[in-house]
Length: 174
Image 1: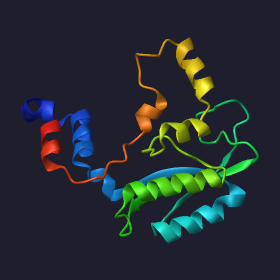
Image 2: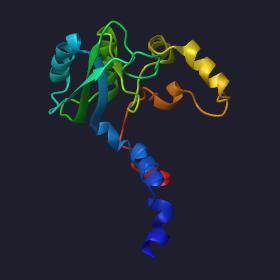
Image 3: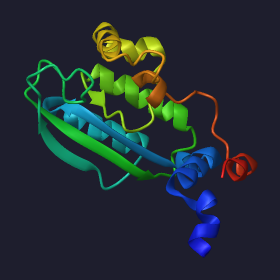
């Protein structure tokens, strides 16, 4: 009876929407970056300086040889990448947007990419400089996705407005 009665408010989608609306997730840093192995120590040092989150996930990955242009391991000029996963709460995380944008810029300088499961703070131009927009538009057109589904930038992009705990919006959403 309880499950039936509360299902509308407590299903997974509603709980996830509520978490996003409350902005509770902004108290944690959750990102994975794929970086050429020869540049990985630079990113690990940068991570220590900026966030001091431990442990850090390190997973070697072979670069893909075919055109998986949206994949984080589609990076030219390297054979082995290191997936550096940074997940956790940090005391230094008082400016989440600024820190995320700094990481995105730094990883791009290292010829790396971020995993697109997490928030992305790139503006459209920055995003499409990394990912092949022409190729992606052709693919969307081929499968009639235009006007039906949002594009990948719209799915992962987070607005650069400041994050604040939003209790009323979270309750309303649930």
